[in-house]
Image (cartoon, rainbow over all chains, first blue to last red; front, side):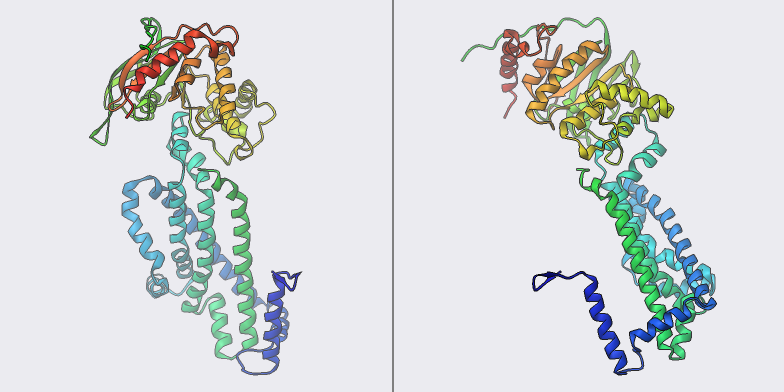
Length: 251
Length: 265
């Protein structure tokens, strides 16, 4: 960004908003928005506490397990759909349906079946993350040049070798894009799941802070979550850029 | 206009590696791509499949490669009926078909790796074949770092290092610039002379076919059938530059042009 002929780093705008937050907080306009400085002070106070760390651990566990399942199922399913017309006809309507469906409405159903525990939250994460992963893996496989498939075939690759040596790699830019989008959706999934179950992890914390009007605590938890989601998305984007060079050269 | 120059008639083939018998190919139940193709590919020689677009030359090559099924008839390689790709055949692709995520040496060793050869062994063979096509020193480069001509050299090295009897090339130089194409054509002659391999070469360039081929199979379009088989009587042992000025070369190019002209719209 260039203002009055000077280069202003992107962080500058963040700083501007932080100052605005601090001013509004100090003016005590509303109880809902305490000053940023006191939120930051609270951050150092409550983050090391056992309850916060355990909420973070429980959330991270559900998030990681859910994503691993979504990737382990979603990527092969997407590749299968990209390669087989029958599989595509069978699954594509469902994938498209779930991709655009308001998934939050389904969480109570999962809750009824699997109870108020980690299983429900893990499944919610899977439910949020998997569809875009499937769809992007499918798109990646469909963009493989036909001659590369013929090449694998003519040099004696069997189906498994063609999958692990060609399809997976050729579709990697799209697969990674799908995983990045899936992981971002999974952040929503894990928090929505916890909020609805509301006795686990951050869901329980938010409920506690909200009901007792502990706004500094509330904003602290929110800041931590936002920062984690941002770092996660950015590191995946970085990984994606590393393989992007060959997405363009596939022709 | 001059009358067409008589073409050198093909001699009967005594030792053929690839035999194609009464081959038909019908696409989607209606489009007849190839009709009653019967042709032999003599051992140790370069045979071109030449014709205008729509004559089915690439289809024929892919059926021989086992990448496409025939609708009727059969292909035999070393006497055995072809039902799919096999280790005795290697393919060079028009668009190179390199793995963009893999280095040159990994691309070249692909065929050997699929055969389950140990890493050290296959890399040693690959290094030799990379040097053979003039790419020594580029083993660890990636395809996007190479020019079009160099990429096709990688494709050629990959086909050479599996040590197949038959090397099939599908318009291998059409995506390469004119200067590099000429250089490739000259090098191909050296390669055919040195390697004891049978080459099947698809091209739509008359000059290219006459320059590199021992034998030219002329295909006519819609449906693809064999119009003529020509063996240009050119001595290729001496100067590769001299071939383009050889009277037989020039006459053959002319004669094929007269022959193919009738098929153009």
